[in-house]
Length: 412
Image (cartoon, rainbow, N blue to C red; front, top):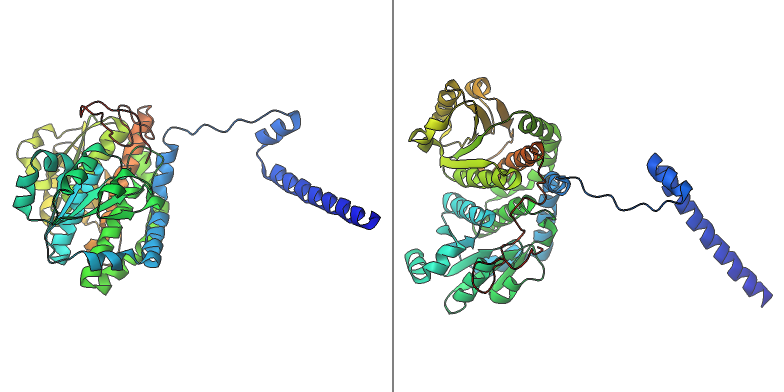
């Protein structure tokens, strides 16, 4: 008995000794402030997040999120499942609100351009107010409903409406593993690893984009495009390490009254999302146009108080470069997002953002979305705002029974 008690006491002493060592290690690695508090017996409160801290962390985490998306899709074999359930030969309709709507239009544009799949997007409200007209005009029986939170009222009402159409198959896309949207859709695609703590969509936008680019490739089996997407996480991290601070510094230093975003083709929807990001994060006034449409009226605002950002596309690069020079001569601030800059673009840009990617344009869209994330955050911080929780906004627009009274702030 004495031997057992002795062993038990020794075990307790050993366990306590190991705990003491662990505490000592944490103490030695702690900051001077923490060590001082520990010695004096002061209780340390959890540090309050700085304004924009969560948003910036989520922006900078995008390459890791892309890598996780690749892993999850490969291990779950969801793409193979969806490719068996849905068809590239029938029209697709993508439905969403806000960033999810612009994401819907971007995916539809890419599917149409690169895969020859008939696809388009509409805001959820359009489907609600004119359901029969919208469905008849598009002829779509494969409908994707997007909501990061899975709680957006208009998207949920659209999903409820579509349940009455027996020939329609729906796919709900959300970052919420347990949402109402899942209950209303035929199938669900969940990306919880891409969700954000902050209000605005950043990494969830690009992760969903890449997932649907992958789904499109599942239909056509293009190995070159697939390999190009596979290189994005590593290249994205290297690019962020080299360029993020430059973009933030420019947006923090230069003050503008108006922000304009221009793009052609699929890049137009990147421009729309960029304008929304700057508006959300910094409460700034942003306008968006097809690049060459800017000459037809909006050109009147070009001047020192306006920053014009170009998403340069391969198809329109020559004409867009001429417009860059034209607006620079009018005194406007110029930001250019391009894969490889020409001498003319270098000469006439106040902020030149080169992606520097090898491979097809198809693999650059997620990359091209990031500069606006960084710009919006920096502008908001310069104005003394908190991009994590922009004023007047919530993570999901949840309406009351009368259709227009927000009930409460909802999580993802």
